Length: 245
Image 1: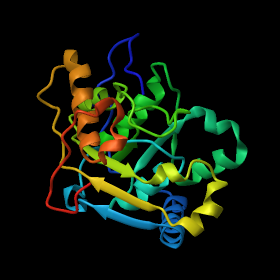
Image 2: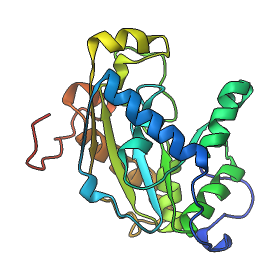
Image 3: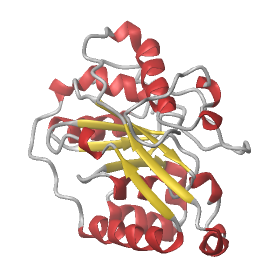
Image 4: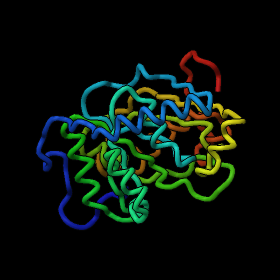
């Protein structure tokens, strides 16, 4: 999500507050299916759920290594997420129907998508949670590593006042395409979702979006094993007394 440049700034106060929207029926069905399939095909562990606030506006920011990351992210949190996905997915009718059933919102990458920004601010203003992948894309590189983050997450945090919840997802790079799901059943990859402490970016100025983005990305990197940290390899890692990375 690219910060908006042209036109007047779009702030959280410009969006009327409302009650958090209930997730569509398809969301709960999709999450239930994700949980069942993940437990069947992989060893899945979620750590740090105590860091997730159950109410109030929340921006969940995670790394993106596989097409399964959005569903796995939603299944790993104890509250519903409004997810955003690249608008190109809407060209496929089956994927479009699935996204709409799950309440996923389209996002035009590489430009100031004011419609997506407004939708995100509406959810946050109503006390809901949104899920974003600040890298913006998985990319073709192998092995998968963390890429430099885009400014969208920090932009939304600074304009809405909502905290950012960093999440590190490890192991999903073994599932690069839907066809990998068959072979995955025999390999049972280790999937680990680590949730870190909340980041409060409210003290940053709008001129510090880049610095705030670095803070978000390093928090995500700290939750990943060292070989996944890529552009943020110097991050020391987050220690919470659990099993070492």
